[in-house]
Length: 315
Image 1 (tube, rainbow, N blue to C red):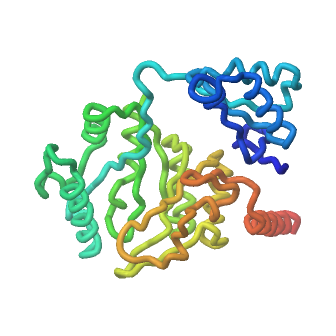
Image 2 (cartoon, rainbow, N blue to C red):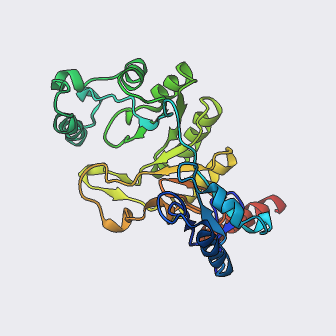
């Protein structure tokens, strides 16, 4: 049996987990038979057992494991939640959809694109704004009120958009997102965002967003649309992506969000793989990728950088 790490817990579990929902009133009521099945699974190398209070099988599992050393088995259980659930609805943008903010026809087209989403996807029975109501500059206060007063959301991430090739302020300016988190610190978290293709300017901006405005993570978008055509980059690009990762680690940030959709128009499929940033970022976790040490290419790049730095110091 091969074993895998369970997240970042340090626990090693078998890839197969024995579920016990049917070892009771919902299935097999012969407890001795259920215990024999659990022991057979343990003998086969399975060390991961799932139970739950609502199954009524925690007692059966306890009896089966009574003589088994506790550190040899990982038990997953669940409890029934009572009361209002805590809703972390992830992302809100403080949009500036004023057409004056657009850099030419491509930006204007993007705003029209967003309004089409609003007009088409708003559920039946809810009001649809007119274009002049929707296509304007929104304030952090308005976004906060809409999210928290008109939904069940309890916490969100105020997230910028670095579309500086399409909009004067990137469409969702980071300054307004930071102000939203500072104004409502109990329910809003600020994530920074930069355009890695801007090189040194992007790295300097990361420092400002973390040190002066408390950014807790960064969101990256792997396409620009300069001159009306997509200019994609990859999360494993040593010239574009790796300096961003290194700067994030230097700033104490180890959480990078990679955009998994195509913001606008066609894009080469190899730059937006179906499995997303988890293969492109070192030690990635799907949507939010933790920067770590799993990527050999990343480590080779860091060693080469360290070598160049030490050589310059010694010289």
